[in-house]
Length: 104
Image (cartoon, rainbow, N blue to C red; front, side, top):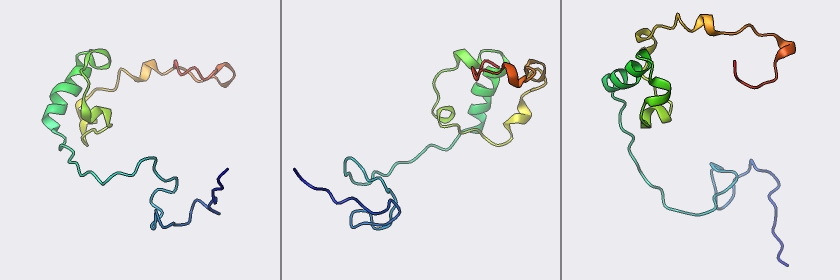
């Protein structure tokens, strides 16, 4: 049976992690892979995503999109949408009736 020396704290650095960037460690050591993220095309976002929601097919028929999957939304897009229809749909919150189902 082998013995493993447990660290006294997760917040201290180690030889393997001298800057304590990843206090849990990694399962597989790999070299750093540099990648570039595409810059968000605001016009494309407005034409596809905003237009899809305005026409009513945004929630179910939009194709998978890298920027929306990462929650990248250009600043100022709220000015392109009409949110007045949302207010009547907000239910009255009654604490005693809440089951946490998230249907509201």
